Image 1 (tube, rainbow, N blue to C red):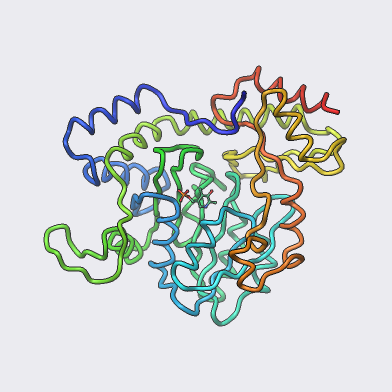
Image 2 (spheres, rainbow, N blue to C red):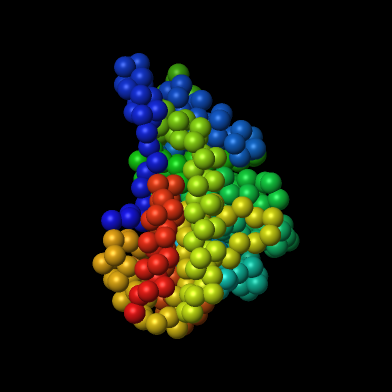
Length: 365
Ligand SMILES: *Cc1c(COP(=O)(O)O)cnc(C)c1O
């Protein structure tokens, strides 16, 4: 079976973990600090604060931005639930805005319609590894005094005009979950140029504890710390990041070259000056020979695993329907959720694998 995701882990990561285990410092320590330094350099941001998940990074961002009860935070309904759940964690209200049908990212025009006097932040999601339209988003944010939090959980190393994902808004967040482009099993990162936000995130991950040496707690916090075991894995993953990114991009290019023009299928859209890092290679299946579900089943029979991200926009999950959302509220997200299909694109997918995928798609009936 060609899996839809596979961690790109080798002997380097195993050796790095063994070293940390032997060192005796296995919770947050020098490896986490080293990782933070390297990650900040990678992004070109002043601060990087490692945490134990992408969700923790998003929650820390909202807290740093001062989001609290009664505030509204605009985001996309076409994302992983974490994006919107972290808004609820701060007792604020998620306000969804519909997406663009070609990039699957939040529609800037729709953001404008949702801004009220209660809007305090926007969480943009760089879905599948593809950056949002930040020139316009940042303009709206500036005009309205809104903080922009970039959910780059799927987009490490993506770029627009040479600028890295995570640095377009006020705070950027990353995930190192097992399926993400680089991973340590579970992990996350918070990046910012803002000293106060950074300090807030450092306190938030450690129960609001002001210094390592004295037990003074100055505000509410959580245990969001990353371990040195995870950081050691990520330090090795970072060395491979350019190779991983290139393989994903090359794989996507090969798939697109061979699938473009197939009736009933649309290949992913890449904007000029933009580096899409293909966390997912997602096609749109619309008026294809067979239904998407049957298509998925047929590919499965040929040994190709595929996935649907996401079969249900968040506003149609029971959890968010309680906020008053209903079918028809975000027609583009609803339509797209019925069309998307992600194909294997990760670095371990070989040319032979892709040839099988292409052949199977062309021959499926
Ligand atoms: C993975 C992901 C998250 C959450 O990351 P975790 O590390 O699983 O907590 C948030 N947003 C998006 C878009 C993601 O893909």
